[in-house]
Image (cartoon, rainbow, N blue to C red; front, side):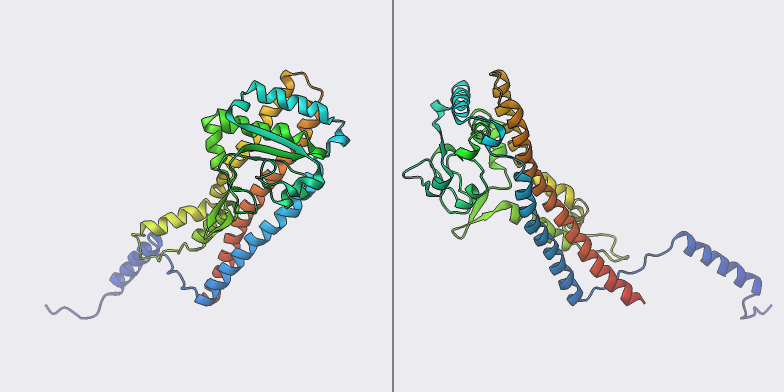
Length: 318
């Protein structure tokens, strides 16, 4: 019997239903639209601009918060009481035997400090906002390429009580291996690049942002994604957490230094403890705000780049 070349309507209907069911149960992914080079560059530039804006904004916000950390005379703290407690704290932790020194100087003389005639050289801008500084032996000084040879702390007379916090840093660095590690891992430290000091808090978030923005979406048929792109995907998905985590050594170091100062005042029953707790609390918020702005800057940069790229993809599909 001859077999007809025509397929019966019943078989055709069965075949179409079967194929439709297969498609419904195993829908292929839409291929990723190729982003134009111009849009890719525009997205990267926009992402970097967001982080740059966050960095710039963090400075005035930090200064505003720091204003609430008042001068000692406003808090009723006397210079002679600060010097007394500072020496007691140094003796208690045997810091003198480890070469630690400190100095409290008038604000108008702060910019003249140099390693040869005083304790250490400090950037004038550090004192302009009334801060104190602890510098471990061999550290690179803020805003300069000078390396300090001494284990020292300096603050100005108007904010002399901050020296207790700086001595807290000395306790951490000289008496604790973990404290020394935290100090060395601080993101606000600097490294020398071609003879110039560069702040890590600018390099590291920028690097995280750059790596995250380099992650490429894999095509639907590319099931075996390479390990490099997987790593970039992980960084992108956790960029905020990673960025904030890089600030943890600094935040912990600052927190422990304040704790050492307050614990000492508590043990000596000093009346300075209440005003100093408030003062150092506001100072700590400046570091916390820096970490928050950097984290938001990285996350915002990634989000804006994705928005620009996705807008291009949607336009291509239409």
